[in-house]
Figure 1 (cartoon, rainbow, N blue to C red):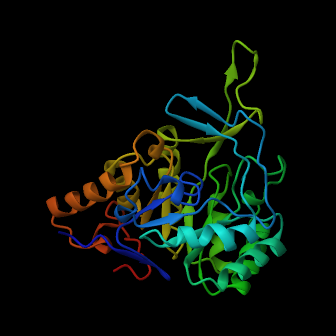
Figure 2: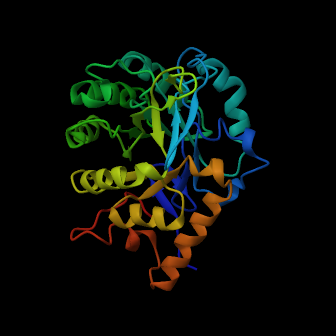
Length: 312
């Protein structure tokens, strides 16, 4: 069988399928549903310096082609994450990527420094793009200067692999991506959710208590795939595709467009075996087409091939 392993900095994965942040909590909650040995890595629920209760319910709403969520970064906070959650996550048979979010560069630095000492963590994903907590004007995710400060602060605090999670909700994602690269990120996740809403016709009110939420699922795939194509052609760090990945074919589109790996999220709610099916489907496609390594597969649709740093 082909070699589907991928290495992005210090993150070594058996295959390019990551479990996206927030979908499986800290991991152990879904042990009875998901075979973690079939995925490449797990990205934990986003951690903040202090515990967060998140937004008021209802916080989820179905929509054609996807799902709206307005969880609001509910989490146990850094102290409990390190003491209680991380040891349990580390028991799982796959690498751990810790997702973190702060209100300013200082908090991102605090989080990165605290995680730097933990050998259980292979990489840190900087979540600058959650649409449910950001200020409505001048959001951080659309400000290259603010992004540069955050990445620089985290970079100075840790030697671990840094992954910057971008938002699709900006008119100039390339400037943000380039700012993150210059500031020292090792990879980019492209991209988070788009803002959306539904109306409850019986209550005549928004379906979500937060009014709007982040749109994920199949409806997001063509949007974020186009962004992966743009970003992968303008940066020299690896890109991880995210948004609407539900099947092996979806994952392959991202990979052939230039992503070195993909994150699967909403699809897990419908099919906990989705990561296993994706990994198997990618391998079968490679075997069928005489492709032996991920390095040969990534960016096949491009005239100038993208390179995944350290791809096995």
